[in-house]
Length: 309
Image (cartoon, rainbow, N blue to C red; front, top):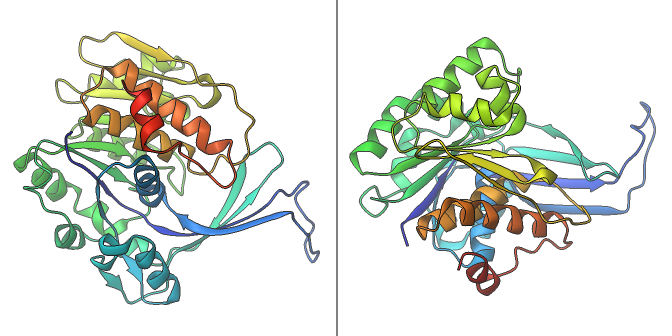
């Protein structure tokens, strides 16, 4: 199996809900569920790999407070190597709604101060040679994003394929943000995007056409994956053929991090050198299980091995 790593945001998620309608100012609402848990795109991906029994590396930072210590401890030896930034840890409060969707309120906290030097302090380029590194939260990690050219150069020197999932820009998909992502895609080997992100970046309504357009801007041999929620996922890879899989029908409990769980299962399958269709099937199957279970379950190592056989 090829090496795997994730680079980006690990923060604290406080999940409350469900709540409907949105409360009026000055009122108090009692909800049925609360959960304090590890969050962030990188954190969610790493937790899914843990649940699937997949070996991985993770580069992140934490704040200099009790939440930062809690996050580091949650990842054991991996977390003890993370740099500590002298600010408060980023906290996201997620309000869930009866349909399984959610609204987040997030502090800036420590995430903007994650740097390329922090990444190099944690990841061993030689050990990751020939593998995949998922790059997350480009619009939250200001210092690292400014050093993306150096990060891509480092990955190229070590033969590490970058998989990109930028997350949603805080100021929306402006022309500037779209141009930036297209530039990052030109250095990436895998794009892991949702349908709105794909069609917006390409300026095309059809997701398959949009995926082909983005693929044409990436290096030869790259892959574009479009995550479509309950409609499953599609991908365009080498040769330009469309690969599509349906998602299992499940009762949704919590969609938070669904795309990150998909990324984890997809990349773990790709690292096993499975066919593209099997990788998509693994992503949709594991993500569907995760969003329909409470406490969240990824199925475990043995069921995952069965999926990718």
